[in-house]
Length: 48
Image (tube, rainbow, N blue to C red):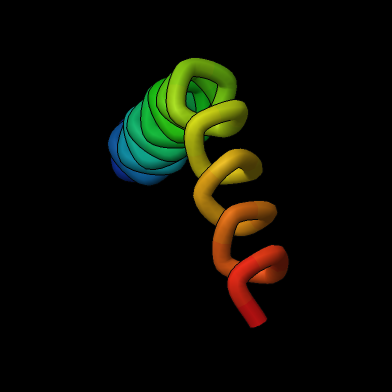
């Protein structure tokens, strides 16, 4: 019985690690592209 719980716990840990990795990648991408997006937004607002 406890053996099956180990597999369930392992699956949850793997999902948590994958989600954490995705969050870190998204944060890095936004940090790199963020200033360019702000400039693009400001240019669009200025042209209106």
